[in-house]
Image (cartoon, helix red, strand yellow):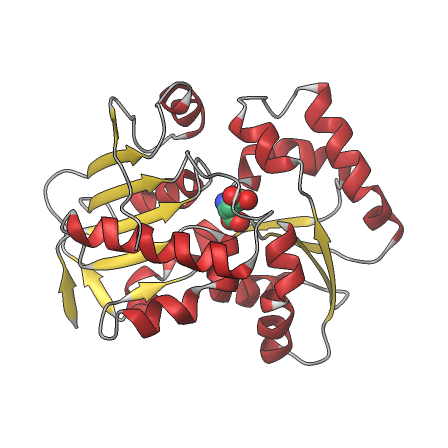
Length: 268
Ligand code: DGL
């Protein structure tokens, strides 16, 4: 199997850190270049062409920084632009976050009814629906767009804040009246609000995309990350880094982020 020297991981902002955290947990000694496109977050409220253009630019930046494989740590880009990325970079190992999460949800559900929470772009695109149907055509799927979650998380509001609770209650209360028993956190930001969501849906099994992918990383990439003595991560963002480090470190438990570099993303 091909060996990866540096894994490029990207998201529109903080969300990809939930994937990064899991990657580091299951793949110690890995070398990672992380990019959060904080100047242009949120992606999920934008159209497919814009999301695809941003994603192509993000990957180009990671490749210029030495990445030789890519994890798309963003549900929105995974849903909307994965094919475009693969077409633009044939031969480059690229993994999205949707596939493993769907397989995990299909295993977990007892009722056969799965809910997918995501951005407007992700839910509108139907990628989770198609992937779950491929897992098992008899599954019933309810998609719920939760557009306020990403701005809440990016502004540093914590999971126990009443604002987070109000938004979760507004989006998710109707699910309590259904038999949906597995809920995919289909946006990589949403694990930041895991406790809030669990409070509103106490009986559902919550599935985050990062953990499922991180456990099968080499298989998903078709290439295996080289393991060094220490895990090394370089963090880059596209806007002033105010807020990134404290919010990141509140969430990261495998790794501690000490500095972040502001970079400019070239238009392509
Ligand atoms: N974290 C991303 C996702 O998984 C993007 C959210 C956004 O920028 O709207 O969908």
